[in-house]
Every structure is written in structure tokens, then in C-alpha cells.
Amino acid sequence: VEFLLGTHEVSWLRRTTVPLFVSHRRLAKRKYLPRALGPWALDSGGYTELNMHGQWVTTEPEYVDAVRRYTADIGVLQWAAPMDWMCEPWVVSKTGFSVVEHQHRTVDNYCRLRQMAPDLPFIPVLQGYERADYDRCIGFYEEAGVDLWRVPLVGLGTMCRRQGEKDIERIVTDLALLNLPLHGFGIKIRGLKQYGWALVSADSMAWSLRARRHEAPMLPGCTHKTCANCFDYAHHWRLHDVLPTLVNQQPRMLRAG
Ligand SMILES: [Zn+2]
Image 1 (cartoon, rainbow, N blue to C red):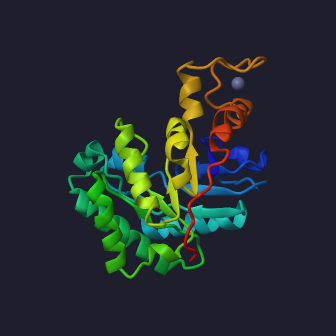
Image 2: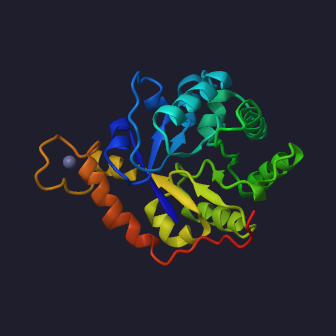
Image 3: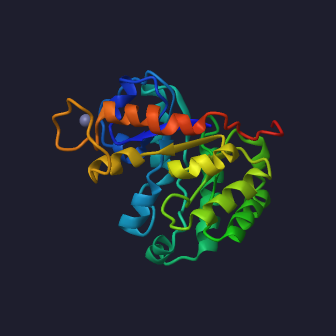
């Protein structure tokens, strides 16, 4: 499993060779962008945007322009999340649409982004909430002419804010058994132990929340109030809490594209 360290701090792109996961919401405000030292992937910030506005306020051309700018200025962009529609019940109630409508919009957006910018590394994302939703979403991609088995990565959406650890495990492992090359958005570290084998990659920013809530001691020598935006703390967490859980977890890539 490749692990992407989630961060709010744009400047880390030029400070570390560790793979990072950075949100469009953070980058969009920046006039000057750092040149990345290592690989990184782009979060579209959809969860925040849908929660704040009940819809996507960013337009597709704006997003495409932004991703093109990040690719040129920052470099080493591995992939970019689409403007997908999360399906947590509270998000669905905010937008006023159904889960099915969220799925249609997610698939349509991916198709349009790909059409507008075939040169940019947008990935398709499966959205849903119940187990059966994800199969339906695969069907929607099929109907749209997208072969999920021939793309480098398929994002697995609406995974990170659930309580039911068993539900997540079932969805992740069922989809992995279809040989889809999955990226788990915001997968819990505890979860990685259980079903990390089923993922090609995953990202998490759990270190920041943990530091903010003082659920773990601060790093010795740190003088800030919390380590919630601490470069050393995040790297320490990745090294000691995340990477050991990923040892011997081979991604199940049984069929190459
Ligand atoms: Zn610190």
C-alpha cells in the first residue's frame, strides 16, 4: 500500500520527499506555489465544499485550470480527485439530492473532466453509502463508457466518516476482490491493518486531529500549543504508527490494465 500523508500545510511540498495528499482548497488561495520534492496527490475538497454550500461552487473549468496550474508549478502530481459527490447521509440531506443523483453527478463530472483535460491525471471515484450503492456506481461508469479496470487508480469515496468499521471492511474487500485498483480516502489506521491488503493506496490526516485533541503526547522539544500542524509530528506518526501496519500488505493487483 502506498501511503499519502495528508496535510493542510502547502509548504511541506517543498520540504519533504514523503508522498503527500493536499487539498485544492489550500492550494487555490496561493499566489505562489512551492515546487514539490516528492510525489503528491490532490484532494478536491468536495466534502468541505458540499457541506458549506450544499453544492459545488467551484466550476469544472475553474478546477481544470487549477489542476493544470498545480501540475505546471508544483510538479510531480500523481493524480487528482474529481469533483465528486460524497454520500454520507448528512451530506445528501444538505444537497437535497438522492444518493443515486450524487452518483450520477460524480460519474458525469469525471467524464467531463477527462474530456476537458485528457492530459491531467483525474481518477474516477466510486461513491455510495450502502454496500449495493457501490455496485450501482460501477454500473454507471460502465454505462458512461469508463472501464474502471483500465485506469491506474479508482478512488473509494465516503469511507472516512463512518462508525461501522465492519461495513467499511466489507465494501473495501468486496471491491478489491473485483480486482479494482483502489485508493481509500481517509482510511483509518486501524482499518489499514484489517484490509490494507485490498488497497493500492490510502491517505490519512488522522495525525492532525489526534494532535489537536492531545490524544498523543507532543514531540519533545516542540514549543507550539499543539502538534496539529507539526511537520516533525506528522512524519513521526507516519514512520511509527502507519508504515509498520503496512508491512507485508501486498496490494492485490491480480489483473494488469
Ligand atoms: Zn510539534
